Length: 69
Image (cartoon, rainbow, N blue to C red):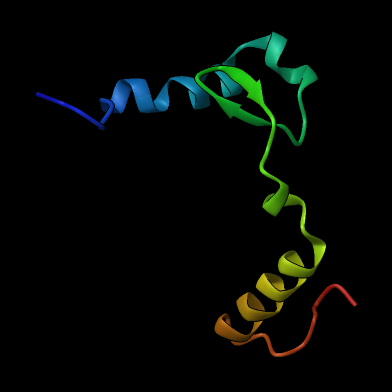
C-alpha cells in the first residue's frame, strides 16, 4: 500500500511533458505540479532569502566571490 509515494513514471510525467510537448514552450519560469501551472509560495519570491542562498552556494562551491559581478 502506497500512502505518500508516486511511481517513477508518475514522478517524471510533468518533466517529460515540459520537455516534449510543443504547447509547453509558452511557459517560462513557472512552477508546475502534475502538468499544471501552480502558484509558487511567497517564500520562493523572497529576494533576501534568494541572495542569502546564492552566497551560501558560492561559498560551498569554493567560488568565494560573485562570478556574475
